[in-house]
Image 1: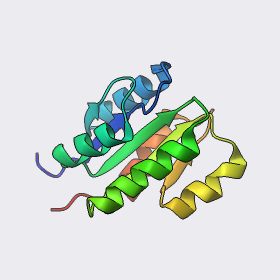
Image 2: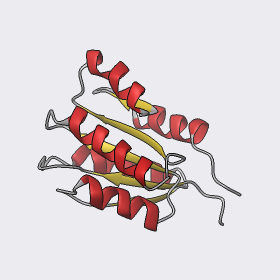
Image 3: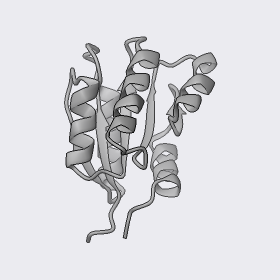
Image 4: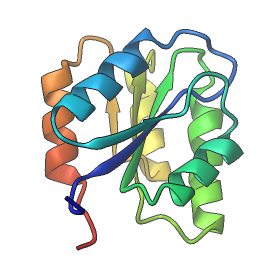
Length: 133
């Protein structure tokens, strides 16, 4: 089936806490999406390269380190440089509510904060990420 949503789930930076990313990856996979999990300690460059190489429709970033503003900004800049802003970027983790509007200005489509359910994430991806068929 070629019209399945392709999602890259990535852990940028030095944060080694990946349980949430793995739970989200599994929920998206169980919902019928193709999921590529990049593993820990990925650079923004590696994440963007993987996302483009995998022809992903979206990339979800899990950031618990407090470096979300820098990491999201870098990834958005790299996507711009690759003319790949059609790739939907979303994320989650320990991200203060006050930072979310700035992330949205950068082009981040959605930020899930602690307590977001996997059902809500799956539904959001289904509703907001299209495939190019």
